[in-house]
Image 1 (cartoon, helix red, strand yellow):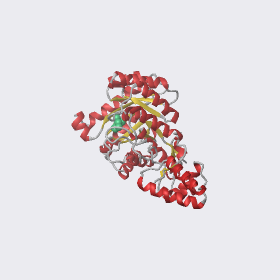
Image 2: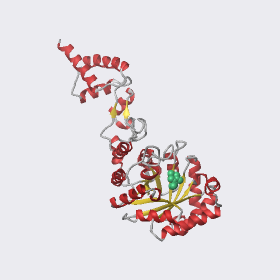
Image 3: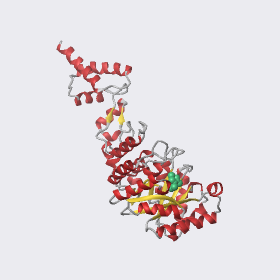
Image 4: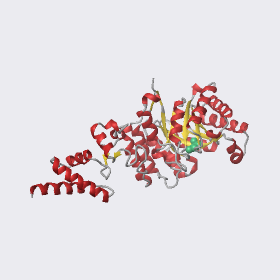
Length: 388
Ligand code: KIV
Ligand code: ZN
């Protein structure tokens, strides 16, 4: 049986924390509406105590959405939690997401408190939040570098205090997939009240492993994944939502898990985010890059024209792209050339086609990309010579 994985989008909070990616309230509301259209389960809209602007943005997103859970982030302090509550209480379904670091390096160097004190603070924060709302998530910041037995103690205690979701972030993108799988399995198997909460993942991409770690954690039994559109986020970013969702969809039999994301909205959401923040994704970015569904090599183009499944593991339509993009260039073969000419309305006789194809190859050697106008020129030249 396929397990449902909840998608927690943090583009408006952790994503926005990446340099040059900040958004105003109006932009956050527009993106949140599109995320709701995509059917994400939770939208983390900001960090209400951080500024008046952030507070207003979380409140406005909370007011704008109909069905999605709207979360705000807060440190494990009463003042922060209360401010967060004031913002998310405007949502039909509001969540307080409170966090405290649990790794020794964070406890010693940043918070200057002992493990026992951190445990106490975590429990107090969850209890305080639970007096305000029913839906409380607790994150063990830097779980990826936290001692596993201590992690189990904290998870058990915050579930007992009323957290319905417990998040185990790889805050600094330090872990590797096999290790992360082991860590999540350890917690799932040792915490006695684990079935009372949803275990969540939140993986950063410092070693380029954010998506791989998220998928490994899902395999180990996590029920929620935290991610951002286009993978934006602190430093090297967060795990990219579109990659996780399409991996689960494309390899559904392998994972036996699914999300409820309307994948046909992926491209539109990615483009909306890029236009808001003014940051394009790299051309070869999986799923949403300009070249993600482009085939240039002749052998590949021939294969795709015969049967798309030869080189396409998912269809462009499934992510909301109209069709695949056969890019014509020096690696292209006769089949792709002929197919594009036919799309442009030119049915060339075999002899003319051969000469036209040779001209195309010669041009492609000189030019990086061949445009439709170039093809039309080659085709009409060929036809003229036959008439003369
Ligand atoms: O990366 C992280 O640990 C976070 C937490 C606040 C969830 O963003
Ligand atoms: Zn983060």
